Structure formats: structure tokens, C-alpha cells
Image (cartoon, rainbow, N blue to C red):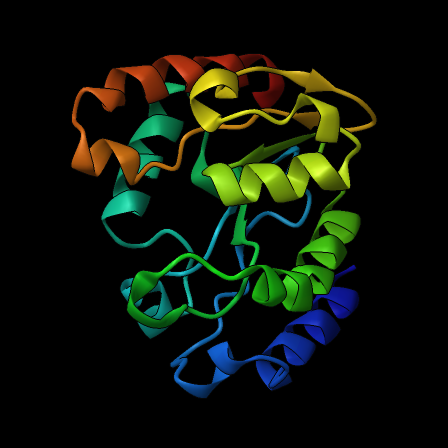
Length: 187
């Protein structure tokens, strides 16, 4: 599997299929265990991620670490990535066409890691993951389905993006409560 991941990494590094590659510093491929039971999928890298190539390494990442710790989960035991691998200009949301262009990479990551639980972080990631795994009819606003468990071949548990708590500190307790759900999947 490591060879397949190395090949995928090379494909991502060489990708020039959309405008996001034009100003990227480093594609953000992903980080964590290739044997992870739990996979977190964000939407797109931010400035710190673009500078380092490491997902969730900025302020949102620090809070994600706090959330994982509160649920008793070691960050090294999960896999963390984004739908798109390059930072959109000015941290805007990735566009539908950009998501479509980059989706083959995240689909391959999911296939190779084969997690038991996939946790989309944020509304765009939630829509992508739920569409992909046959839960299109269940899609609603993130405020209504965050922390809900959707059982299928894979278990899907959408969460608010950790950045929401940076702008609204009252959301920290909501996210921590949601992450408690993961305790039963961690072992």
C-alpha cells in the first residue's frame, strides 16, 4: 500500500489540472496512519497548510488536536486530508469544478486507507462525502446533521469545521460533544 500511496503522492505533486496549482506553495496531500480506522476530510488547505504541506496545522488544526484529545484519540492514529489539495486564493471555498477535478485524489485515498469511519469537516466536505457514499437524500444544512451517524458500508459522521469555534467560541462545546461520538470507533 505504501507504494500505491507514493504513486498517488507523485500524481498530486505533478497535478496542473486546475488554476489552484498556479499559486500553490505545497499541495497538502494528507497526514496520519495509512491504516487509520477514522479519516477526517476537510475542504481545502489554508495559508499555513499551503506553506508546510501539512493538513490542519494552523489555528483550526490546533483546535482539531484539542478535539481529538478530548475524545481520547491520537492524531497519529487517524488520517487527515482535504477534498482539494491546493489552497484556493484568499482562502475562498473551493469551486465545484475544482472539487470535481481533485476528487479522484481523495477517492483514491479513501480506497487505499479504507477507513471504517469518515468524518467530513464542514459543509462542502459533508456534501461531497455524503453524495459519494449514497446519503444524498440525507443531506441537510450542517447545523442540523453535525454529529449524526450515517451507517452504510462506511460510517459517515459529519462535523462542523473546527474553524467555526475560532469565530464563535460558543461552538467549542458543541464540537467537543460531537467528537465524543468517536470514542466508540477509536479502538
